Length: 387
Image 1: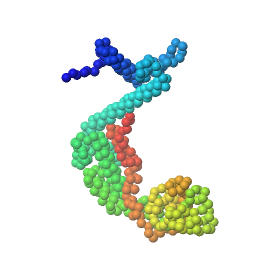
Image 2: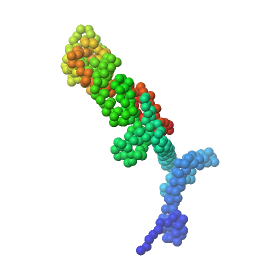
Image 3: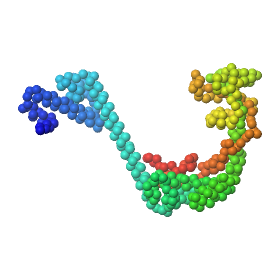
Image 4: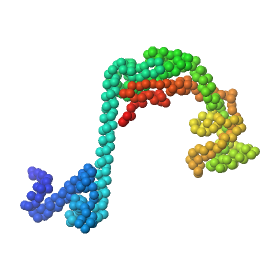
């Protein structure tokens, strides 16, 4: 069995000397094509590396005109006749430049990712060094502090699901447990401050049991009364409103319809004429319900609870796919307030609202290796890359 080995360009040239004329010609053509391919590859690598020698796509001749370099000509010359079109040269240079830019972009992305990975590794190493000291203070809060050993003991006692080794938590796992332990203790601090004492020095289970007993007991009534005293709109949100509306496609039309009603025409007659079908009853009636049940969140419920019985609102713009203008302008009229049906429980419970409002005012100090406390979210924010 005869096995043919592929020849290198130099070996092919040597072989061509003793081969038939046809074979020798084929070998020489193949060598020229390989040479052009190799030169093009060298040119591409040089461009990707920012080589000054290949920064320009042309050499300047003695008479000042520009001509492609020999490397470019060889790369573009597919038939080996030494003649190339300027369009082919331009296309080749553009493709080569684009490839060089792509390679450079990939290198830059890889460099940035390597730096970030190094930062992550360094932060994790710093955390693990910090966690090696059982007596170190992980965080302090009004009236107490949490040590590393306390948090580690909590993790071992009740490890997160899919955790490999509860005795060796990662930074994320440790910080997650630290956050939940701080939140629980802040609930206890807030309850105590409001007159419903909870022992923040107790175990997690005992703190949780005491806090739940307070919240499910008399604290909810206290929180409800406190909320009403701080925000009078809460009672309106818990009261069914009977509402009618004018609905039009432009602000000008909405204002004109409003003027007609204020001028003495009945809203039912104007609504029958101007309201799109299906958005209200023909007479403009929407119904009787809680504001949030009728309109959800947004501007309309806020507008409604600011009205007195019989009052028309100013036009409110809402995005709409059924309107040619892409929006609808709504004018609300409060027809009646069913105060005998006010039900504060329908928008409760109030305890979380009162507690969270107080908890976000407390100052928490967290060990820098672990992150920083974010008051708005009541959580430990992990250090960001580059910080």
